[in-house]
Length: 397
Image (cartoon, rainbow, N blue to C red; front, side, top):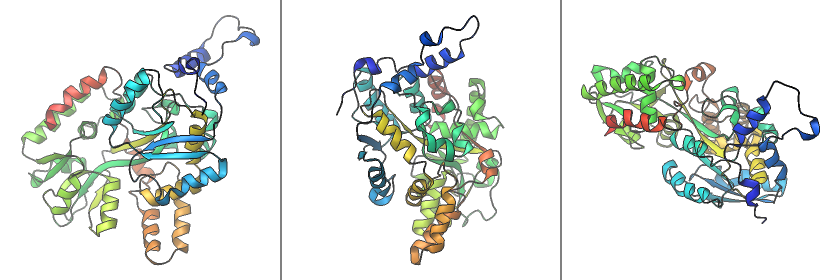
C-alpha cells in the first residue's frame, strides 16, 4: 500500500476555505491562465491515486446483513473493503483519533461515520477531515434528496455525505394516552406530571426547548439558547419530567413508567417491529430534529480515492435500498423506497410483511410536510460549543 507523502496532506486543514477564497477573488486584471493559482483541494485530489483497498470504520449492526453491498462493490470495482465495527459513540471515537491525526499520522481507516453535532463540528474546526472531491460524487448529486444535499452543518457537503438519518420527535404509549399527539406542548402538559421522558443528549434537548419557543435551531443564537434553557428548567422544576434518558427511554415508555417521551424514530420503528408493541410517534407541529450519521474521510487517510468511490456507491438506488431494508433508518435516496416496495410486492411469507412495513413507514420515509418541520442542530463550532454546553448541561445534571 502506498503511503501518502507528508507534502500531499500537510495543507489539508482549511483546504476548502482556501479553495473558496481563490475561487472568489475578483477585481483587477486576471492572471494569465498558465499561472493562475490552483485550488488546493483540486491540487490535493489530482495527486491521489486509486489503490484497490479501503478501510471502513462504522458503528455495530449498521450495515446490511451479510455485507452484500460491500461484496457487490468489490465485484464491481475490484476494490477490497476491510470493514470494522469499531465506533461505539462519537465522543470516544473522536477523542481516540484526534491525537493521531494531530501527530500527522493515519488512523488506519479511510472512511468513517460520525454524527452531526459537537463532534462533527470539532473535526471540522480542527482541520481533521479531508474536503471531498465533489466530481466523484456523481450518484450522490443525482439521487440524494434535496434535504440531504443542503445541510446547515456542512454547506455544500464539503466534508461529508449522509450514511443514514433519523428524527427526534415525540413517542407515546397508547395505553395511557389515547388521543394523537401533535404539539410539542404535550411534553409540558400538567396531566402527564411525572410521566414525561426527555433526552439527556443536550443537543436534542436544546432543540426541543428552542422549538417550543418557535425558534429555528439552525439560526439560533446564544440568547435563544438561554431562553430555551429557561423553559426547559421550568419544565423540570414543575415535576413534569420523570427522567433524562439515553437509550433506556424506550424501556421506560414500553413499561409505562413514562407515558410520553422525546424519542428517536428508528428506535420506535424497530421496537414495534420486533416486539409488536404499538407505540406511537409523531414529529410535532412545531418541528423536530433531523440528525445524520455522516460518511467522511479523516485527514492522512491512505486510500482517499477508494473511499470516495465507496461513499458514492451507497447512493446507487439499488444499494441504498439494500441498506435501508436492513438498518431501517432514513435513507437520503428517495428512489430507494420504490425499489423496496417492488421487492415487497414480489416477496412471500414474513419477509413480505417486513419489506412492506419498511417501504411504507413514515418513520423510515418522512413525508414532504415532515421534512419541512425537521431541523438540524445549532451551529456549535469553535467557542460556541462550550457556551452551549454551559447553558444546557445544568438541566440534565
